[in-house]
Image (cartoon, rainbow, N blue to C red; front, side, top):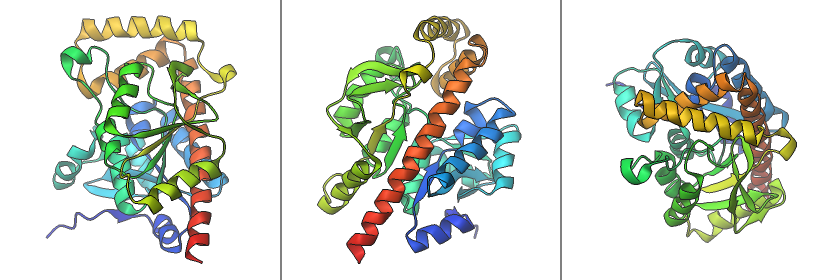
Length: 311
């Protein structure tokens, strides 16, 4: 019988066994979110940012049907360079494993796999959410419903501004997903520092975010995720006027070419990269590196609290 269990990388297995801080990282940013050859270089930078802040990186993906938490460099290189890597949400994991696929995990799949492996903090760029025209298409990312039932902290720059941000914020509230701003009471919009929506709660430090995780665990009431929304500084965001022009043109192209479903986000991100002459890529990289650093600091603080509690 084939073994379909989750495989842990050697370093990740040791860190989890010893109670050291670990940060989950997605692989769709490697296979589908960034252009080659930048994707592999940036993937290594992200892992290094986690290490520099004191935690162990656990990039999650699937290689030849094996679901791996903590890809080694050869496996990471494979997902960054080969063609035909599948984009895997939670629903796809078992089918992809049974068919021996190479796959990159989305926010939803990465969250679910990380939680199953015992990892409590995850860094990504921006969440998926409710798509524009969702009232007609019912197109909504599985990220949202997965986070409603997955106890993990996700450090992100809000949701991608190419989506319906307001509707996504409302859905997160309905689904019971906790959202806190990191040193802000405004919800960020990925490329943009401020997407135009207020938040009820904020935390001022990694330690305070870790306290939220401790309180959730000790209360034993809330099983959903915690979104830590970490905005870019205003002087590091994409120029808002350029953003708006690029988005409007991209949405017209979507309608013209009939792009739908999970092809929408990669299509629009590629359009942004091309239309902004690489400016959006630079912003995207700044986002994920900042989030990786913050996630690692939260994981370090959370691990310290677990050590004190168990002492």
